[in-house]
Image 1: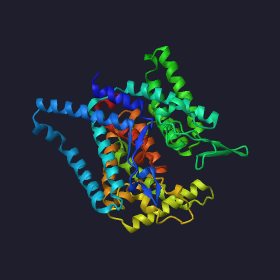
Image 2: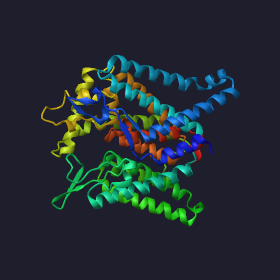
Image 3: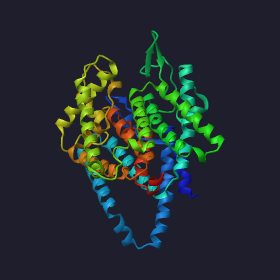
Image 4: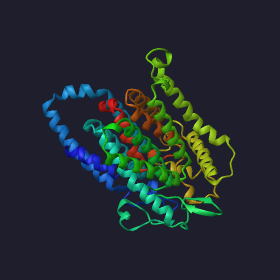
Length: 435
């Protein structure tokens, strides 16, 4: 096993963790109050990515010694041309559009980091069996921590600090809680920044593990069968305890897709002839774009007095006003939190100043019509690759796209960015066709 592949596997083991060092600058605050979204942070996983990029760069130089550079450029010019166009536009966005240039530049560096990571994942070709085993192990330790936190109604502490567990109690101001039986119960965070992120991780990874387990059941020995069953069972409990409704929905979508993938007679889009077989990419893209539109319109049209829904509606309305104020170029990378604060009701406290809970709306707000067009082309490219990939990758990416309708962490938080980068890269890996 190469050093690059070993570092990638270690990165996946630590994907759920958030041990990091925050660096607070003047641009990290809104009205004097620090914001995690604006604060540059170096995570342990960032160090692993840096090492992975360094070793892969050295390997690439050796590879170029054996192949003509002109041939390498010829084979790569389409992807390189597109990526350079996106990078140049985002750099323009940072330098000339963003009001908070420090926060924007930090977001730009993170995008470049994950683009490089994605290309490395495609090149090193990780084994799907290893990814499933690693995720099963990650689910075990994350679920154990989450169940322990719910039982204690506080953080566990001790060694789990090194995995990024934050210190909190059920009475901590602003803590995520659920009411039941006349009292409030702490929603577990595990090693994630919010229970919704924990739920989203489990909602995507559990069907991924289950699909691979069922497909290779006869090849797995008794020990690993018990290992996978324990992982899925504990993960299911932790997912329920997260009380993340969007994660529950996405988990149900994953299980439904798994059912259709397991029984060929139900595969509506896999027939070899007919209109649907020939136009399935276009049909899926149209459906996806319509859902993207509905994910903005529906929350605004459903009246609700529940605080979380009112919060999301306020953020959506503020986002629409921000888009109308700067439709072409957006407000700047990582500047939505700053800009939306001027459109939110003054009665709201600073804890409400967050990105809009819709990844696609967030992309539009920050990068404008031009940048959002680039992202739509990128999504279309992923859809093209997904249709060629195995159902294992296809289901996971479909779930991630759905999660984007309900939250922003796939674009704004470390674990979500890593998860999306991994599965998007696997869609471009030739080995994923047989996974």
